[in-house]
Amino acid sequence: MFHKEGYKIISIAFVLFLGINVASYVAIQNNEWQIAILSLTLVLLILILQFFRNPKRHTELNDKTIVAPVDGKVVVIEEVYEKEYFKDKRLQVSVFMSPINVHVTRHPINGKVAFSKYHPGKYLVAWHPKASEENERTTVVVKNNNTEILYRQIAGALAKRIVNYAEEGQEVIQGSDSGFIKFGSRVDVYLPLGTKIDVALDQKVKGGESIIALL
Image 1: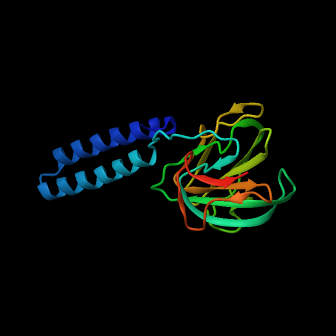
Image 2 (image 1 turned 120 degrees about the vertical axis):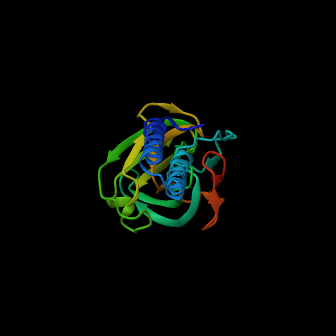
Image 3 (image 1 turned 60 degrees about the vertical axis):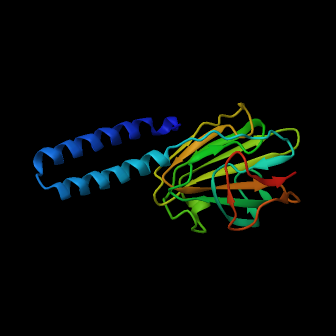
């Protein structure tokens, strides 16, 4: 199953794959070169297909848990000052996605979208300290009776487009699609102080399934 954001790119990749290999078969009489071109284009096609995969996730809905918004590795757990929306101290948990991870962003809690904003910006590497403030990014806040959770999609050096589906006033379900980041990046989640973190640094998590914190 592939994400809708990849349909156009996958279609173009298939056309190029067929075109290049038909052309190599007609123009090149050397079997070794034909096999080399076929192998290279096949690897590139597989990489594109795996990047846009959208596996089904089974989220156990629970208003007292916060699920990982994306697949990847936990790279930051620290207390920070969040200055865009809360304007106070929060616990930040950041998940870094490599190009081979699933890049669907999912809502970490049930609730209503209280804030959603896109920021144009730079394309620093995703682990750069200034990436969360200077890179292209989207900020989304979901609110329910228990809490407000802010999560921020951040573009990286390879990510050139962030897709955000969250709209203010929209009711959302924990684990459902919130957006998509093309070709690698990270997502920061900002939690209230006192939240019990349920992951460790360098731990790998699954979006929509892994619990990262308990309220």
